[in-house]
Image (cartoon, rainbow, N blue to C red):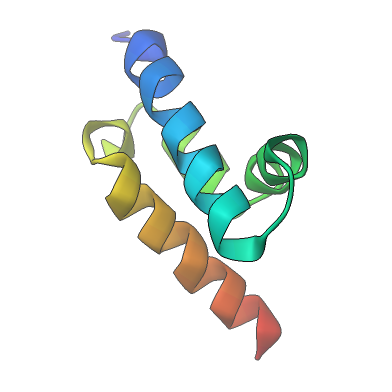
Length: 71
C-alpha cells in the first residue's frame, strides 16, 4: 500500500489557510471544519488520488461541498 502522508502534510496547511481566509475564521476553526468534511475524508483515501491535486483544487472541492450543504 502506497501512503502519501508527506504530500497531505504539505497541502493541508495551505487548504486550512484558504478556508480561514475565505470564511474569516481562525486556522484552528478552519482545521476542525476541514477535518469534519467529506473532502478531508476523500483526501485521506489512498485510492482516489485526490492527494495528487493542488491545495487550491482541494479547497475548491471543499467550497463546493459547503455550498451543497447550504442548499
